[in-house]
Image 1 (tube, rainbow over the protein chains, first blue to last red):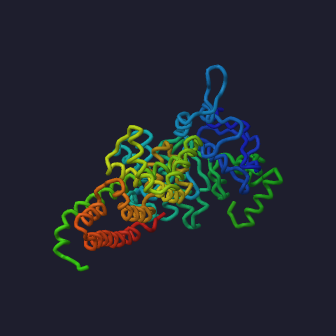
Image 2: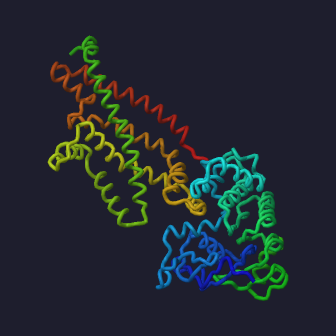
Image 3: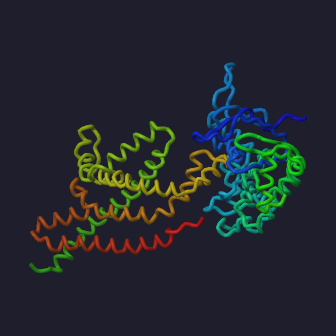
Amino acid sequence: MTAAIIKIDKISKSFGVLKVLDDLSMQVRPGEKLALIGPSGSGKTTILRILMTLEQIDGGHIEIEGEQLYHMPKNRSGLVPADERHLAKMRQKIGMVFQLFNLFPHKSVIDNVTLAPRLTKHVSRPDAEKRAMELLDMVGMADKAKNMPAQLSGGQKQRVAIARALALSPKIMLFDEVTSALDPELVEEVLNVMRKLAAETDTTMLLVTHEMGFARDFADRVLFFDRGKIVEEGTPTEIFSNPKQERTQAFLKKIIAAGHRV
Amino acid sequence: MEWDWQFVWQIMPTLLEGFKITIIATLLGSVLAAIVGMVFAVLRRSPNPYVARPVGLVAEFIRGTPLLVQLYFLFYVLPSAGILLSPLVAGVIGLGLHYGTYTAEVYRGGIDNVPRGQWEAAKACNLNPVQTWVHVIMPQAIPPMIPALANYFIAMFKETPLLSAITVLELMNQARSIANTNYRYIEPMTMVGVFFLTVSIVSVFGLRWLERRYGRVER
C-alpha cells in the first residue's frame, strides 16, 4: 500500500460547547475517491473545511503528502503552529468546490478560472487563458467563457467552480455537497463532470454528499459519520448493501424513505 | 435695497475664482475621504486588536468633534508643533479626515454585504489577504455603496464654507471680502447661494443616475 496522501490524526474541533469532531483519525490514499456521508451536523463538512484551512483545529495533527498542514517543524524541539506562508504553500495542494458555488460575480467565467493562477503562480494571461479554456472545455463550459456568472444556471455555475478549483492543479479536490443547491434536473451534469474528472485524472477526491446513488457508483470507499465520529467505513457495497452498524442502517433507511436513490 | 446686475457681473470673476477653489477642495477632500474611509474600514476589521482598537478610537474621536475645531487645530495649532500647512492643504486634510470617518461606515456596510462564501472562495483559490481585498472583496463591496459615498461628498461640498475660517479663498470667503469692501451683501451672498444650489441640483440628478446604475447588485 502506498503512503497516505492525507493522514488525519486525532483531530478535534468544537464550535462553542458543541463538539463537531471528536478525536477523529482517518487516512486517504493517493487517487482515492472517498465519499463522506451521514446526517447533517455529523462533522463531515467540517473535515473538508479544516482541510481547506477555512476552520482551525483545536487539537491533533493533519499530514498532507507527508507534510504537516497546521504545524511546521522547528529545529529539534518539535512542531510549532504553521504561519501564513506555510499554510499558503499547503493550500496549493488542495482545491475546493462549494455548495453555493461562490463564483466571483464581478468576473467573467474565464476570469474566475484564471484569477488564482495569475495571482498566486504568476502565470501570464495568455498561458492562464489557454489552460482555463482546456478546463472549461472539460467541464463543457468553453462556449460560455465570456459570460458573467449571473447569466448561468446553477449547474453551469458549479461546473465553472470545478474548473476554477482545478486551475491550480491541486492533488486533492474537496467537494462539499456540490449538488445540494441545484434543481434536480441540473444535478446530473455536475455529477458527469466529476465522473469525467475521476476517469481522466488521478486526483484524490473527497466528497460530502447526499447523493447516495452517486456515492455508490463513484466512491472507492465510503465513510459514515455520526456525531463527530466515523461510525462505519467500507466499500460502497459494504456500506449500502450490508451496513453493520445500527446507526448506519437507520440513516440509510431514513434517506431511502426521503426518496433518495441508493 | 435694490438688485444691481452690473455689480453682479463686476464681481463674477472673483466669485468664480472662489468657486474654483471650492470645487478643488471638494474633489480633493472626496478623494481623501474615500481613501481614509477604506483604510479605516479595513484596519478596523484587522484580526490584530492592537490595530483594530486604536483605529476605532481615532475614528470615534474625529467623528465626535466638530469639523471647524479640527480645521483650527490643523491650521493654527499644528504650526506650534512645527507642522506648517497651507490653508488649502489643511482644509483638504480636515475635510478628508472628517468625512473619512463617515465613509468608513459606508465601507463597513459594503464589506459586510459581501457574502462569507466569497472570502472562503478566495482562500480556497489561495489568494493572500491583499489579493483578496483588491480582487475579490472591494470590487463587490464598492459599487453598491457609490450612491452613499456620493451623498457624503455632496454634504462635504456644502460644508466647504467652513474653510473660510482658516483663510482658504473659497467661494464664501471671496463673497464676504467683496461684501465687506463694497458694503453690499445682497448680490455676493445671493450668488453664493445660487452657485451652491446649482451644483446641488446637478448633483441630485447625478446621484439618481448613480443609484440606478449601482443601486442593485447582481449576484
